Amino acid sequence: MQAALFDGDVHEKASRQMGLLKQFKANASDASAITKRGEYSLINEQTQGIARIRSEVLRLGLPDTEREALLHDLDTYKTTVSEIGAQLQKSAPDLHRHYRRLLEGLGAFNSRLGSIGLRELLHSWRELSRIKGRFVKQPDARLAKAFEGAWTRVTVTISELYLDEEMEQPLFEYLDAYKACFDEMNTAYRAVGYADVGSLKPLTYKIKMQFEMMAPRLADRH
Image (cartoon, rainbow, N blue to C red):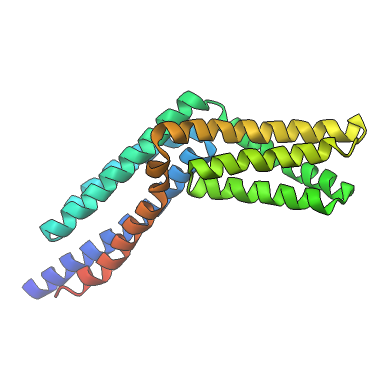
């Protein structure tokens, strides 16, 4: 009877642990939406979610060293997401609206570039997009400067084509909005600290791995 109860308790802990992994993955998705796309409506739920996860970790019966290390990582994660979100709300209150506008206009922008058919222009645009993507994942001053240079190359190339206004104006409008959105994020990331923002992705992965590795060990304690 005691063995059965003990096994049930252990498997309950393992099941709870797998639930925590699912919860954390959902929380990390919300954190990404907040810090990369300005979805500030998710901030309260994301913060409360981390508090719930932290409470559950305390009930897992982990060794002291392991428990304290995980709690420290969770606290660092929570603080980093909070600081980025707060700075973005200050520097870029309309970031999500701007992000949606760019996403919705991307297809038309690409079609217009494609209709021009200039290989140099297409290459410059792909390079600009690539730099922005890298910056969002791992921001630093070097990439911010590279973005400025790449954006200038795209706009200068377009201006030198002497397109008619009907073709040229929407291209410049989109590129201006693209740069404005980038500048909003750059201002916030720089204020928080590029290194701190860049630390969020590896920290998130580290926490996920800790949760994944705990469940089998909890299930084997019998």
